[in-house]
Length: 180
Image (tube, rainbow, N blue to C red; front, side):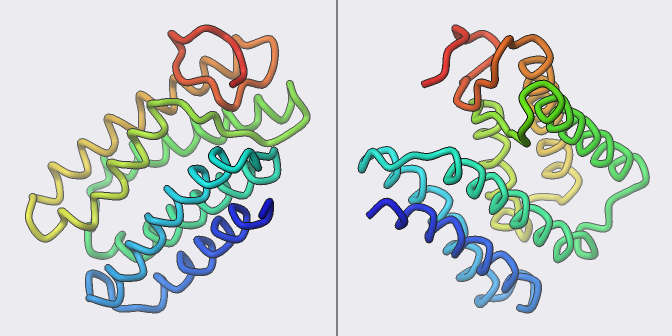
């Protein structure tokens, strides 16, 4: 039973890689994409409900999220065709996120991503992006994503810099400092 959430997270890695090989915005793309999204919801839900949460599971979930984001960036980048300004913004967000991970590595001797509300909102906004792509102007969607991702990345970096211990389940910079 303990391995089920980790298997679900690992399946998201596999399905995320499949996204690279299917036609973007096709029925196969959306079916695979929805499976990825469903697995992202279910792995944590099952782990919490069955009391099988683990450090490995949290790391595997973060790795699966990063691989899915990378696969989507690779697949959707040519479709979105962002401006230089947007590219610089996206690179800046990535630098902030990598800096946050570097701080965690230096301070706590492990790579870590915090499960803040901001990061969850960023994940939701990123998830709905391809779904809304055919219906809402791409530039509007990209600006929304960049704003939300910037705020959550900065929040996570501040938490990593100011916390006395690693707090992967800290919900917000405004939340009481404790692991849940």
